[in-house]
Length: 320
Image 1 (cartoon, rainbow, N blue to C red):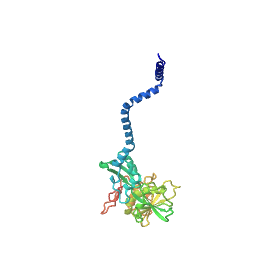
Image 2: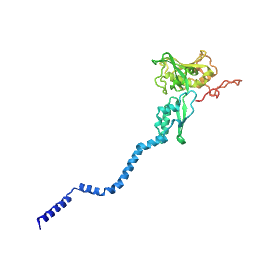
Image 3: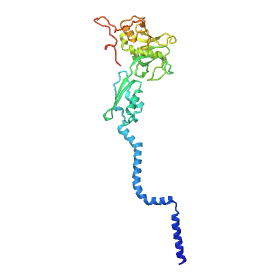
């Protein structure tokens, strides 16, 4: 045997020993290279599918939802507002609540739309929201009704003198931009010394005396012209009586002492409806309406050619 042949056998043996001693990770890496084409043929479509689905959820679905199922202002129909609401309710709410970013595919779309409309100062309550065919929306609303103007002395640096704030029967401030100065004469005036709102439009006035007067204004508003009542004021000191005491005045200088606001009467005080009936029946000026006697049945009058209107009659009471 030659030296050359022996050297070759020695080299071959070293290579076999080296392969045997190779670490398992290296062996697996080599095996993966051999099997790579087969694995990738299955793995890559799966990767693309997962990536495509994630991209659709992140961007594509939102694009389609807003392009084809987005809420459009012209597709929103609301309950016809009363004549005293001059602003465009739909346009105002649509802009303020950024409803252009809302999709009808959103499961909470109706709830979000109801919340947006309930935030408007003119809306007292959202009765319901319905999705209709063609991406249309039907929103049923109950509007606030102005019943009084609160007389104040302006605290605004750009305005001086007297002014008025419109409120509803719950004492909530209404947008004064919807009223002209001459229209303030169409409502009862609430005159409370030092009164001034503490909140903004759509919130309560923030003065317990005004809140009490608002309750009475709500009751008297349908009968204002019939009775010739022009204003509501406070009587007495709240430090002596925790319940606000009210008095009303007529256009010819008449005055009647009303007492507690509706729903807050003292135990011996007649309810508000009996006081109102006393006014309708012609209670003389300077009367204390708290002295009206209780009756177990509705008040009646002899039939005449022109009977005295009763409380709640269709000819006098206006519905909200």
